[in-house]
Image (cartoon, rainbow, N blue to C red):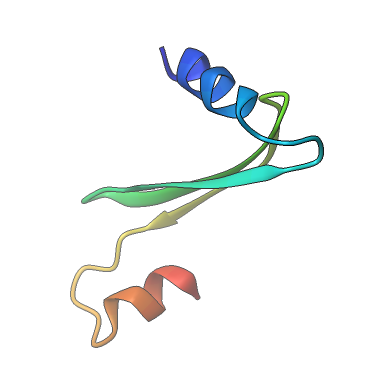
Length: 61
């Protein structure tokens, strides 16, 4: 199902466009860069901080 969603969203993009997607969860935060054809250009998984002073900064860092 995820692949179908990515391909469907990619059809509305212009040539050369890419989408950055995030999945923020309790265990980790996942991000993916996907081009207009649905090809995954990059993936990243970062453990979700348990009690940071700056939660957004800890995820981005």
